Length: 57
Image (tube, rainbow, N blue to C red; front, top):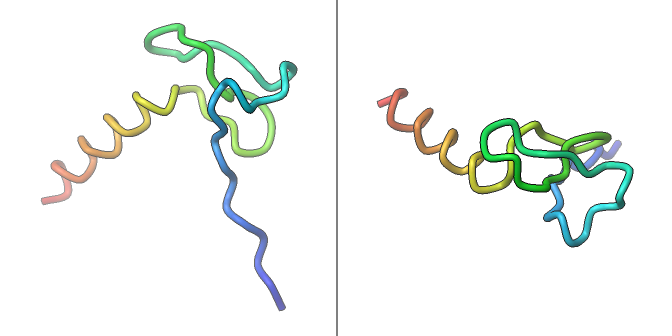
């Protein structure tokens, strides 16, 4: 049995227009809606991941 692939947050250039939205922090265009969407742009997602790593240590 195979497991479904993890959702991928696409860069805005590769994202279909109905799935585009604005980053909740900087208002830059990002893949916000649909499967793999996120309210944060990829840059802010990386920043949050780094903060979470530091907090876990």
